[in-house]
Image 1 (cartoon, each protein chain N blue to C red):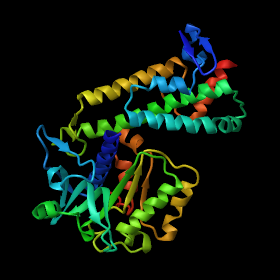
Image 2 (tube, rainbow over the protein chains, first blue to last red; image 1 turned 60 degrees about the horizontal axis):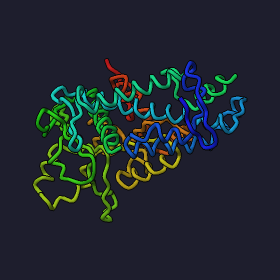
Image 3 (cartoon, each protein chain N blue to C red; image 1 turned 90 degrees about the horizontal axis):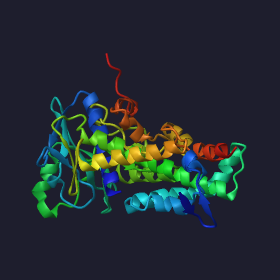
Image 4 (cartoon, helix red, strand yellow; image 1 turned 60 degrees about the vertical axis):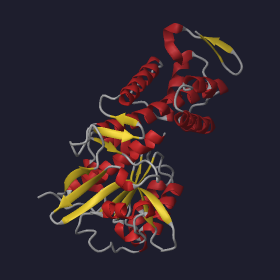
Length: 160
Length: 215
């Protein structure tokens, strides 16, 4: 598998998954291009924020990031943020879809879409969450990982 | 993200419903659509009687809980605001329906309390905005320590901000000073984490005014 970054082409060692890919904000954008616009922009805004603060956060951890490492941190932090957003939305969907307090309610109608425990929307959210868990697990990030420091640690530790 | 906002607002509505349920109110859904689906009002557009709402009742007291309700501000300057979750007296929506197309929003004295929801980290400016909203709509909760008559008796919660994120920067320190300032406001963070547990019980019991301990 090879990926083109802003400055070079890097071939990945398949046996170590994503950790050693030269990934970047551009790749993050490509990875989320099929998501709804607002969600995509939410993740990219977060990626811009991470780009700015990652070196400082790493310094607080007594670590130093070079340019390529910062790119990888942006990528993984962006995916972690996406997973957090999706997980949060899934939690709300599941609370709403099961009717919660009042059992007479079988689900929701939002605009033209029905949200119920077995609806396509709920299924899509669960699938997306599962795919993100799988993708991040293959890179060495657990289900509980969610912080910028987790992404920094992954990138730095993977290369040590 | 419209759906995300709508889900967050509906979850905030359920939080309000659960608060009243914990206080001994019976809960009934109203105006469900086909398939027993709750039709969520997601914007300021549309008449409230065309959407679903919850009614809570205890003894001779009943209230209606509704999303995206347009209400008049407190200062009688013509300002109207759309609150994410409104608590209104029973019959408010029927009364609105009676006005038909002329309905321009609920009167300010019909709004007993409210919730604002944000898919954001709670940062200082967001808190300042919420205080400003409370000042415009229900100033009693930020201008002095006295709640409106009947607020405690009927088990209403204080105006509440619900957020998906956590506190950032000095935001938590700001909120810690609210009681000293006389602000009667709730700030709920990591709302989705609580929702994923399947119950809002912890939040409900910690919202001000605190509910009496169970016997």
